Length: 195
Length: 90
Figure (spheres, rainbow over the protein chains, first blue to last red):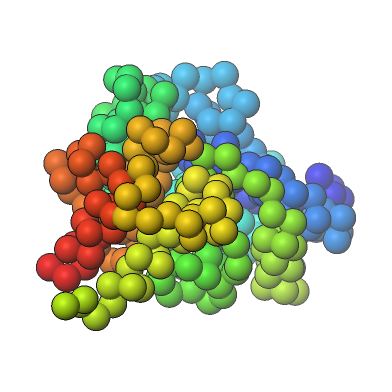
């Protein structure tokens, strides 16, 4: 989306089930930024989104390589926009800046997956068959802090943030709505951060 | 005696249920200690239970071990409130 030249916004969605729950909001946020003149990219990581690779065949190292490859084909500089555990994927991207919406550690992501598996009916992690390598790499992964990212969280999240936005966390909701106020708050915050 | 902060925890639990299950705040406000949750609320499937527990951990600063999670503590709004209060106080 947006023009082919100039600075690019390179975005990384949340992972696993959280990606489905946040995708509609992410796409609308990116569309607004594209309309404002930004060049915007939303690459599909292997095993995620529209990718045909089975998720059991991928690990975090492969995702980080794919992120670097995606940045390589875009015009620079790249500004990273990541949601939740998407903030674990851009570690090796030489980004000009990073903007994270409610970033989580890999440990938190694994805990969430393990809980879903413990409570669920099937064998997998909420329908995902995940490799031991992926889980082991996730456990040690932290969101990137260089350069210092701008962190936005939901107002009811007690953790520290540069900004809190109103609304319900869509990654927790079984049937998340696409809150237009939330879309506007996020898009405006990214635009101001990058201005 | 009602411990300090008890009301706040119940309020947090109502907000979490509204957010995770996409219920209106008005509906959640009608919940009493006897209101049935798991097995009674169709919105509360196993994925939603995971969301409720994780969101409670985040907002109350508690850790819920998987072996503490059973049908009893999820059965009613009162049981889950008592569980959360006990967690916060210990």
